[in-house]
Length: 180
Image (cartoon, rainbow, N blue to C red; front, side):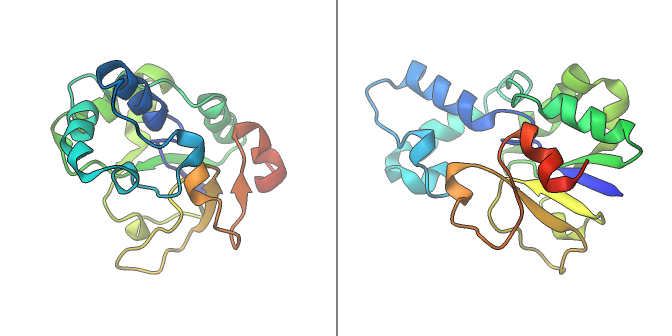
């Protein structure tokens, strides 16, 4: 079985680090807390004038390569691979890609090992990627094709309205949902 796993907010805590740095750099500016988010894109939950400040944080050198792990994710995908499944990290680079693309490779090498950099797929359109399962936090994944994979939701506050897909509520629940 080919398992595709998203990186940001599935393996690497993009939102957690974004919120941490926001509080550090702009403590006087309120943004919706993570548990109350209703939209996948943070910019849709905050005043428009904060947009450049957010971009400044997530596009800064070192942001992606220093993201903390989502608890249990690295161990889970290593275990899934050890069971004989083919596992790829399938992630979308940011439009502000200058640091993002390189640092995704650095993050994967640091947390999973150099051999996993060969299992990293970067695509703005995940529907083009073949696989059996895609584990992703984005509520709806659209593109130019009807995907071959089954979209398994990785639980976040902004995707809880999705009721027609299987859901992993953290990596510990994956065996109940996936069966492996």
